[in-house]
Image (spheres, rainbow, N blue to C red):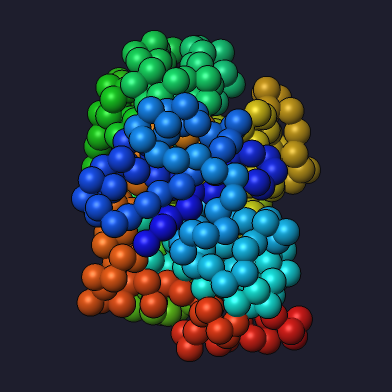
Length: 402
């Protein structure tokens, strides 16, 4: 097997990589018949020289590789026919902006293995960058609070060499007065966010205490879906029922809006579920949220203040609750919004290392042939014959523009 590591070609550029130099070297030690070729890159967080130092070959031409690995979507003109590709394709949800990409993949008889679809036999995802989205998103939320309140300043995450330097920045945080911080979600993203708040010395309290008590120090609570959704018929909650039919539930988030200062959104949201808070809710008496770090970043979705994605270079904007439009972040009456949609890119070295470890442990063995749970087959949207795989035949109408 010969694996090629692609140079990222999407704009804006992404400095992440699927496998770091050390991981490539370790894999070659584990699999003597495995060859890894890396396409040179001037933007990658791990420089070309680092791969050479670890005995990995650099080559612009990857045409003799069996498998090609990138991170983001591969440019259509760079696709090599008849190969197996692994990258985040953003196609299985029928994203219209990538219709031509999927059409070209089929035309070129490429087997597309989407990272987002790599799951175990219980359909649990095996590789993701979500943890680092939580790390950077929570950090940006604190940074935004400091800037909007004028109480402290944190170095931008992308200006930190790595997570260690970012963690050092947390030691400089000082709140002028106690605030309440709410996290929604319990997955990888929320795990990263919780870690940042913990490292900041912020104490966790129960949801009940968060709603009912006042504190003389800054605290945070972590809310599960059961805490902010209730059955329409009787106000109850059943998790299995909610996930199977969220349309039978209504949002019960308003109680949190009245006591939360900084909201860090790490939840997964189903479009059939209710909004957490609407534009009318923001206008209501008692609405208290002053800053939202929307890591989930569902545009015009459950968090009314998220009007658009923001960027790494300009991560903050304001939401004018009266006129329902974007405004200056520092406007006194504005809700501050952080809605960067590519947060792991701010710590590309750490995020790549984290992702690559999961690839080594969970995916590479299956890719090299030991795949009793059909991990690779289940994540393959297309095959080398230029056909959609059975689980993804629903994409046929999408491809035809129907």
